[in-house]
Length: 153
Image (cartoon, rainbow, N blue to C red; front, side, top):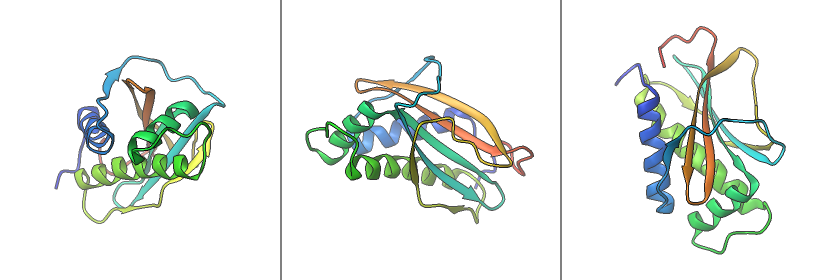
């Protein structure tokens, strides 16, 4: 099992999750990340030989459209439990796939979803932030890592 990964692997994981679960093609984007109160952030943490988190961020409208596609229903008009569950599951799938790339023995947390973005945790910093675009809108996947990670990202 590899002890390193890069943005290209994370990009492949995000593309695969969105294509497989929602038949939604995503592509890398250069759209800048800007803090927004209209954003939802889904987070999964990893602990073990590498400690950090993966964040999936998008605006509320996009989250509703993702939920509609994921569940094969009309998109909810407002954020509800289904939207939150889908956003959490998407982050969980991205984190779970990345866990397979990293060293053995990592533990993946349950996902949590919060309003707003720019979520930070003590002892970690933004390692990388990737922007994606699709027909439903834009999203960002952020990697948070300990200031001195024991493996290279």
